[in-house]
Length: 537
Image 1 (tube, helix red, strand yellow):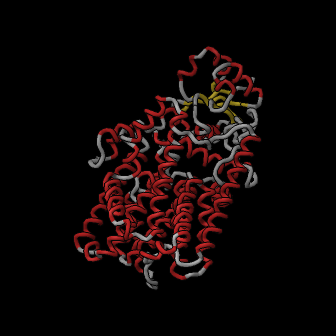
Image 2 (cartoon, helix red, strand yellow):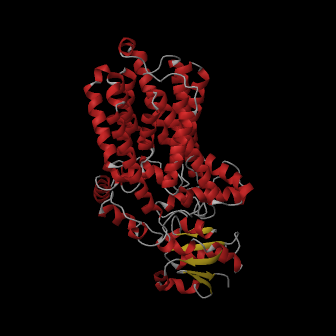
Image 3 (cartoon, helix red, strand yellow):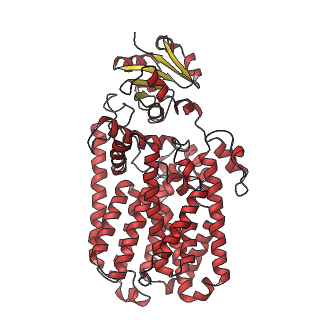
């Protein structure tokens, strides 16, 4: 594939960054930077924030990852691990300078995302050598509603994707210059992306498959041009090393979690044949109704299908490496979806890194069209159509983001949404803080009545891993992972004996249970539906 000529001018890159900055402004990122964790997937967001806060507050070492829920080690600690905690540890160190600041955390994520967005544009610009085409296509891809929301949502999916894009750019630089240093940099960044989120490895694995195909079938690879012209065997060694590094980390996390008798994430495959029928049907129903529109506007899916048909039709003209790369990405995405089938039910962030698959398909088809009929793609009508699709998708992403990031009121109170149907509006209307709303600003009030950050608490009812505890600014226990799920007096008394000083009740109905009376004798605060009781005699 032609990766473009050397471009000395930085003007196209600066223009794109200005365009992306304008897009971020339209998305109201300036407002979102100042918000607390938002309701959509607040469970996972508060796990990330909880680990970061414990790094900062407890001054623990890099490998000592802890959540605020002390359900591990038979209810004595919060020690659990999953993805490589570099982001959490780095932000915790930043907090050492700024103080605890969710704004600072979101700002770090925004900087990383700007880097990933620039890398995407830089690759497209090197491929097509046309600023408007590259910018329109990059903004079209970056208008994924899931990508837009989770770019500032504390989790590692988008940073991992940003690193994948930077690693791919390093590979493009290697192809252009032949310098093996770029290949080493690509492997290192791929390794870091995989450490942050293991699904990021689907890209280097697909590239390895493409390289193996070119090595095994040299004549066929030479027919339409090679994807890899130099250092093919070195690429295989370096990328295999990156995969082994990621495997070593996740092997460590499994041992760590086994040692501490628990985990906050499911690292085992859950194909549909291992799931109850009702759960399979629920996941499939969501996957065929709401999930596609949460990941991309329908026009992108149509473009992907058209691109697939175009590539199949022109398969004999495709470079072997490009054919294998796209085929492997499609197969990997399908396998991933089957093995983690429950993710189809509302877990749109699981499909952020697999966005690489439709992006690669569309880009490959446009590259083939550009190679065969450049005048058609770069014509006034061709560019206008692509820019129109990009603007449509940006408008769609803005609508979706406004619904996801509203803090108060109904969905319809924050704007009109002509690009979304009633089903979408109804879904986002249900995305609220609900019982957690009273905890959003309770920490300074609790400090004012003498509750210290060191005081452990019981927070009920809350089925999340640690959302209530993190928002309250405390460590302690809640329903997730607790003995008897904190649904009887025995478990309540157990955690009180282990040092729980206060009881945070999020729902008044919980007080109707007969076993609660012995623990709700001393009310010390009532705030926006949250009641705090002193558990000390």
